[in-house]
Length: 178
Image (tube, rainbow, N blue to C red; front, side):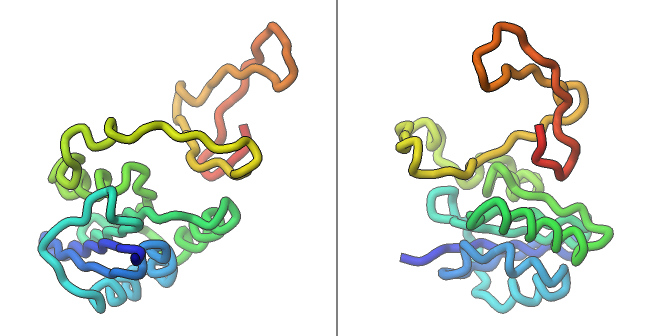
């Protein structure tokens, strides 16, 4: 059992990895106070040489002081918690490019120039079977796509059965409205 987390700190061109057996679901909480406190928190964990993979890593964060960008991912308790955390991060990391790692460990290793597949066995994703949930089991979405530029203009069909399509602008950055 546990909730494994991987932390990476990059300073002066050198990166170091850290591990927590229990903080996987709390990664964003470690980031909330800002870059200095987050770095101190990460370094208080056990230093390791290996990478966790997407199967075992339940949350991770990379703080790149050289490029002034943190990347992170972890399970959010719900949309309200996620939006609140992103709002706080925008204020506590001024001048930093705060990014959510939608591709999990792949985004972190890609940022470091190591490729997205460093922590993945070839074909790892294809081995999982699709699973469905009862319509009433989960009411909050698990993923959101936010296209930018021309791709942000989407066509959608109104909920009621209508033959024509309506043109709708895509959401603005930070907005959840269609």
